[in-house]
Image 1 (tube, rainbow, N blue to C red):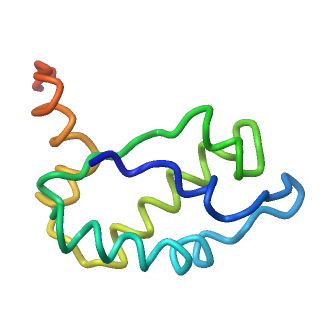
Image 2: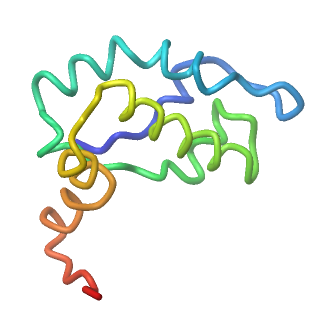
Length: 104
């Protein structure tokens, strides 16, 4: 399950007055509760949502940053382990798309 598209469900934001990250997290919570319960972090992957985040986001570069910050705050809100966080940010995508990540 790709975690993206949240802004398009929240109404239009203005670039000069974007919604605070805490409010975005609060509004997404009912959806994320279901995702965490039924998909688990093992089957959720971060979706950049670019350029779709401009549909409801404040547009431009600010939309991407706000979406990334909202996902980070949402993950933090659930108190996930570092392994679960890694699955959402990149691990699930690596597995689903059969990527060969660069190791250091």
